[in-house]
Length: 242
Image (cartoon, rainbow, N blue to C red):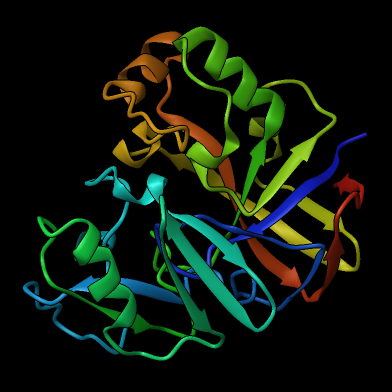
């Protein structure tokens, strides 16, 4: 039976995720705090910085390798960032100041100026607040046929699921998933971009999307789902499909 093997949110867009034991989902919302913050380039002016903006305005793995080298230790009241011997600890909730941006640019001065920004609905890659679902078996199957590392972090999913064969989840589109007390409508597959070239193992597979397309005749991996009914989901919850 399929079940939830990991629950992960990404409080800061592009940075390593925060594992969760349980989360409470709200209708038409992302996981709580998912992509709530981002480092936004100050030399690019979005039309409206109070609304959702596309990823080109932010530091993220589609355009840089640096974030895979930043270890993040998420705790309830604080978060610690580490690169080698250099560390930075900030209190949660994060304050919108220059502390994180300045620390990153001290390590990588070639990066353009940035500032920490936030949006309550989340600065996800899509303007619609979705929950992303990744099948671990699919990750491993793709890795085998593309000769890359089988790391689900490459796909930055919120729910990592186990218990079904590779690519079986592609048949879930249009169905409703019942997980814990929540219900999610599976809306569409996730089309992959160069961010998936980042292995999160200290290397970049520069032609990963091409390998994916050649091996499986698709550039998709994972599902976007919309929360239909609010409720709590927990690690190891079973997934019922209808």
